[in-house]
Amino acid sequence: MPKLIYSFLSSLDGYVADRNGKFGWAEPDEEVLAFINELERPVRSYLYGRRLYEMMTGWETDPAFAGLSPASADFAEIWKAADKVVYSTTLDEAPTTRTRIERAFDPEAVRRLKAASATDIAIGGPTLAAHALKAGLVDEIQLFIAPVLVGGGLKMFPDGGSLPLVLLDTRRFDGGMTYLRYRVVNDLAE
Image 1 (cartoon, helix red, strand yellow):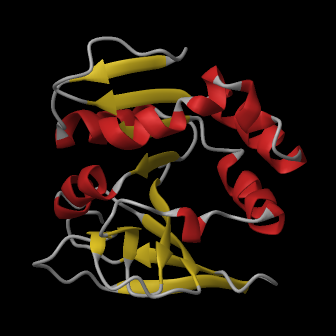
Image 2 (cartoon, rainbow, N blue to C red):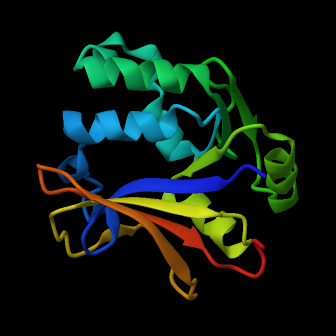
């Protein structure tokens, strides 16, 4: 069965955005982005919360995103080719192709999507991922740890639970970022 993968860039102390909502400290360099592209290339579906989706739309709607570098152009093509499901109670329509809006996160619908998919599915955004983690839907976690402590902000993982993990892979990048890949050991997911 295809995996549901939670992949995100984070500070060393576990935040995806600082207290001011900034996350520029986690911007991947060309080496990291090229590596992310290879991970994302086989993914054909993304599950997003509204805020992350709205940030990601530029990969399709703003040519400047793709114009940043060769790896950026590659990522834009990967992103545009994938299906997107956006969970939002406020978004009325999507400005990108291959996108549908769902009003609420339904764990059973995600289980059906996984069962019907021929490829892995990515889930993005810590709020949406928290629902999937609590429902036992996440099979793998891919962390890109930036070499910075931000001291507070939006956490990558929800409070209030423990989840055993098995380390599958690591990689250190020249710019100081580190990649960690874990399999989730979860009775609900097995």
